[in-house]
Image (cartoon, rainbow, N blue to C red; front, top):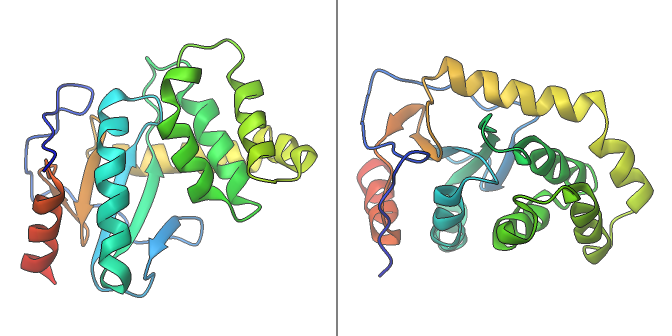
Length: 193
């Protein structure tokens, strides 16, 4: 069993049940059953080391949960991470071609390759090519105002919900203490579903 310890960024041990998050929107990236009554929203930053540590656990949990959960990824690019917004834009641009989650996984799984690179956009374009995306369309979407607005809207919804570190999780609209293992995610779902 993998257990995680979070330190800022990612120090989200406070369980403030007064903090709530906005409902699902048409622009949300959702994996699992979008109609599920169990909705987990993660506010995350692709450049955040704690978020990258959570990635394999969350990925496995969502895969194993099947139709029991709707998992939503929302961008919360931290200002100290120079490539946080560009990585978010890359994922959203891939999403315009139906490959958000594939790009999401590549970005997290290869974080060390791009996190401090001055050529992150080139690296993300390489990932787009690897995923078989139309690279010209990817580049246009990556630089679009629509994508910038989506990332900004996610960030603002996080601020409004009281997010102050990444990752931050909400279950059925309420902020929860970050589960520190796969088993803790399962227990949360069993207790609430």
